[in-house]
Each structure stands twice: as structure tokens, then as C-alpha cells.
Amino acid sequence: MAEEKTRVLENKPGWIASINPWVLRIVNNPERVAFVLHRVTGILMALIIMAHIYVTGTPAHTGWEAWVEEISKAQGFSLVTLYFFFFAGIAWFHGLNGIRLLLVEFFGVCIGKPEKPKPPYLAPSLKACQRKLLYLVFLLWPILWALTGYIVFFK
Amino acid sequence: MTFDAQAATRTPPKKVIFRIRRYNPEKDKTWWEEYEVETYRGMTILDALLKIKEEIDHTIVMRYSCRMGVCGSCGMVVNGMPRLACQTQISEVASEAKPVIELEPLKNHPVIKDLLTDFTKFFNKHRSVKPYLIRKNKEEVEKGDAEFIMTPEEHKELYEYTLCIACGLCYSACPVAASDDRFLGPQALTYVWRYVSDPRDEAWKERLEAVDVEEGPWSCHYAASCSAVCPKMVDPGAAIQRLRSALIKYKLGLFKKKTAKKAEIPKEQIKPKKPLPPESKLVEGVDIEAMDKAPVEIPIEELIS
Image (tube, rainbow over all chains, first blue to last red; front, top):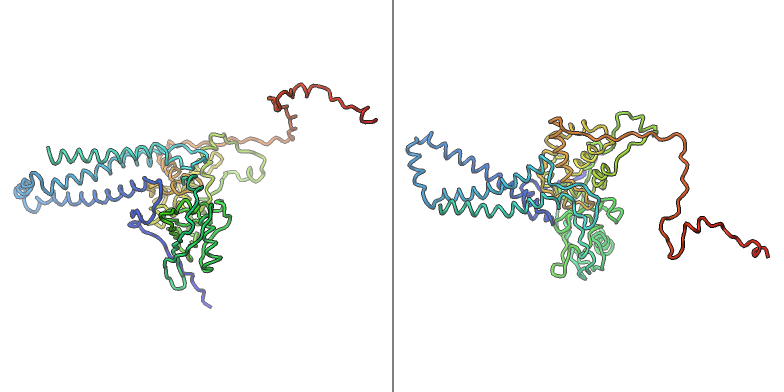
């Protein structure tokens, strides 16, 4: 008699679902919010860099003079300024959070020291200075983005 | 996982609706089913599930054993957060405003039926990191004629990692394990660091070289969800970062391993010391030392007569 194979549900959310905040709603975990934002900004930066390479590579096909003429039209408020503004926002978050991650992931600092469990049973790394650095990133990000917006739009 | 003492002492809503994600392997069908349960103060999710199984629907399947957060069998996703059903009180997750609790099987673990998940892959990964002490000279362990000394500070460095009960909550919360099946996962990597940092272990080089692969600590992105859901405060997120940092140091030749001193067990039996009298006066007005020195007066004559 042939053995019946037990059927199981794989139950793997996948990487797209892993950045969906509604798949898992873990309390006291702003690091996961930072992880999602870091991943999204990273993907956007990769796309922007590819678009940037395409745009700056255009003179090879159209000729330098025609390209300079086309680019010089983009003065004042335009799609190009909006692009710079959004790129600045993406780059500021990715850069600031990247510094925090470098400290934590490669130097193993800012994650606290192991300790014996005591109420309210919060893991040491979640109350270490990496958490303070994360709040600093969330504070600095809009400030720096707004400053960059001021320079892009009004200077 | 933070313990909310105030929420645990609150009285839960009188009636709570349990929305349970069920799975029938015979029909390969998944659906949500609702049950209304009357609660009492101090009732846990597991208590409610057992009540559902006994009184409403006998077909519901879940796994549990100790009922006190020690065995790690009853892990499930409660309102979007992996938790132990026996350790979670209804008052912590349901309120009068929203008396609904959603229960799902643990993510990243294959579902056998309803809330019952298959831990075979998870335990295989755990087994693959050799979660036990390894000494080069096996005889010294087998004979048992020596003791490996660890200072209290060294013990404190690894104590929290020894509390792991392999409940799989960290693996369920991990966004990397959600997309990469080969990733060893927070639990197995925590065990690697637990033994690498143990001064008594002598296989640290082999352990570090074995995890220096893509599916090792390099895949971790530090979302710290593993540390946030751990019911035993093990902090797997920090353990992985320490392991990664140790790997970098090892590659650069800067990693220093602490080694335990070997103490011979004395052949002669140690005589127990005479206990000393307590230093402070236990009872007000009674001098223990004076009483100890004073001769014992037994009224023999009175006793004989």
C-alpha cells in the first residue's frame, strides 16, 4: 500500500509580506519599522540610481549640446526639483539608519549587556543605546529633509 | 516580551470572540472560524482554547503541554504577535472596546492542522549547530574527575541565552526567515553564540567557521522582532549581532576566546565545617554567643524526682 503523504500548509509570508506592517503587529518594536523603511528606501535608491545613470548617459545618444539644452530647461520648480526633494528624504533616512546599523551589526555596540531576567522582562538590546539612536534617526530625518527642501525649493 | 502587569490583573471582557484561522489538510482549505467564550479573571488564551475544544468544537487542533510557559509548545500568533498561549492572559489582548482575539498558527512554520505547526525544519536547524558543549579531550568529561571553572561574570555573559526553550516564536517573527528558507534563524544562531561565548567550549573555531555562510548571521537585518517577542528575555537579536561582530574579529585575527580553568576534584573527601553561630541577634534581648558559651544546665535531680 502506498504511503499517504501528509499535506502541510507552507505558511511563509515571503519578503513582500515581511515589510507589510499588518502581517505581524509586534508591540514595542520600532526597529521593525526602521527595517521596513530601510528596505523600501534602499529599493527606491537603487531604482533612482538606475534612472540617474540612464539620464546622465543620454548625451551618448542625443549629443552633448542637445542634452545640455534639455537639462537647462529644468530651472525653478519642476519635476527635477521634486525628484531632488524626494531623493533627499530617501537618502537621509537610509544614511542615518545605516550608521546605526553599522554600529550595531558590524561593531556589536549599542546593544547593551546580557543580564538576568527581571520585570518587566524587556530584552537588554531593546533598552540599549541603539533604541535611543533609532529615536534620534526618527527625529533628525524630518528636520534634515525639511532643511533640504528649503534649500531645493527656495535657494 | 514585555510583561504588562497592569493588563494581567485587569478583569477581561465577560464574553470574547475568538477568530481562529483553521486549516484542513485533507481538503487543503483555510478559513476563519469564530467562537464566543465566557471568560473569567486570570483566564489565558490556552484556557479559552481548551474550553472551546471541550464545550464548542472538538475538532480544533493545537499543541500544548506544561501550561506554565516552560515547554514552549503552545506558541501561536495572537492578534498579530507571536506569543505563548499559556502565558498570555485574555485581559492583555482583549478589551471592552474590542473583545475580539485573532489566533493564527506561527508564521514561517508549516501548518499541519489548524494551530498545530510542524517544527521538524526548525529542530533540524537547531540540531545542525551542535547545541552542546564540545571538549577536545572527551575522556576528561567522561571520567568526571575535573571541574571547569567559570567566573560569575563569565556566567552572566551567557546565562540569558541558556534560558531558551525553543518555542519558535523568534523564528516566526523573523522577516528574513519569512523569505529565506535556508536562513538558520534567530534561535539556532543564538545557540551558536551561547557556545562560542562559553569558556568551557573548545569547538568555537569550528562553530564560527560553520556559520560564516550566507544563511548564517550575515543574513540578519536587525529588525529585532525576535527579541521583542521572546517570552524568556533571551534577546536573540543581540546574540546574532555579537556573533557577527565576533566573526569579523575572528577574520581579522582579533577574536579572543576566554577559556575555563580546569580544577581537579580532590581525592580526599572534604570534611564539612562546623556551622558558625549567627552573627546578629535573632531574637531581641537574647545573646546567642553568650548562650553558646554558657554550660548547659539540666535539672537532673528535678527530673529524677
